[in-house]
Amino acid sequence: MTPSENKVVIFLGPPGAGKGTQAERLAHEEGLTKISTGDILRDHVSRGTELGQQVGPLLDAGALVPDEVLIALIRNHLAGMKAVRVIFDGFPRTRAQAEALDRLLEDLGAPVTAVPLLEVPDRLLIERIVERGRQAARRGEAVRSDDTEEVARKRQEVYREQTQPLIDYYGTRGSLRPVDGVGTLDQVYGRLVEALG
Ligand code: AP5
Image 1 (cartoon, protein in one colour):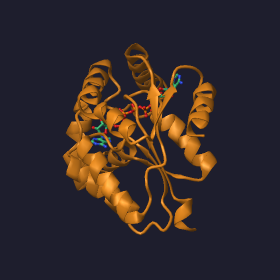
Image 2: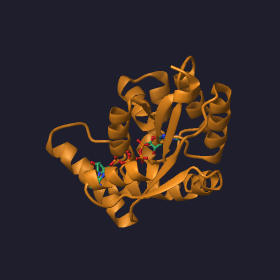
Image 3: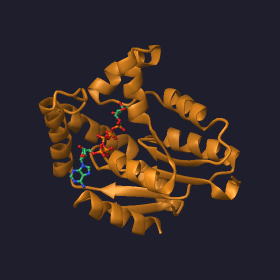
């Protein structure tokens, strides 16, 4: 692979907007690697690793994990990649994370390709998250500890304070691609592909 084949897509959007769902399909169809920081952290929690024990209470509370932990994690994931063909789902979430990612990508010669922003009204977001918890419980599967109405509202608040400013960060760099995230999964995916050109 040559560096010209690098592709870096960053999904932005509030909790429950559909980032993970749409990123999974895009990764599959475009041959990209999805890096979901939420999934990675939950995996550590379920395996009871040292990192998992450190971050578990933060995930339970809907609070962010410290920047330096996430930045080290992403640095490890990117290390040694010859072609950088990735989708970030859930990272960056703060300005410090965004700046660190820019530096890591610059070192790799892989600039950000596009930043789709999934837009969904707050009311629907909470419904989706609570419904996911309900469905998992009904199927006898593990329920995410943060899929309750109370924690979902906390996650929304954290998003507004710490992550929403990244809309301007990527907006001024010309990479932001707003996508209406309301509708069927196929409708949203169609809009996403169109927005990515
Ligand atoms: P993370 O796992 O990233 O959670 P999140 O961003 O809060 O997002 P969700 O997974 O709830 O939503 P999503 O937008 O991916 O939507 P999804 O496709 O799942 O983070 C969890 C925690 O980890 C954080 O709170 C923090 O503690 C920590 N963390 C992670 N990254 C971090 C970072 N960078 N820095 C610091 N801390 C970090 O869809 C949601 C539901 O809606 C699903 O059931 C889905 O089936 C459904 N749905 C999706 N699309 C539609 C649609 N169009 N119509 C109807 N239903 C839909």
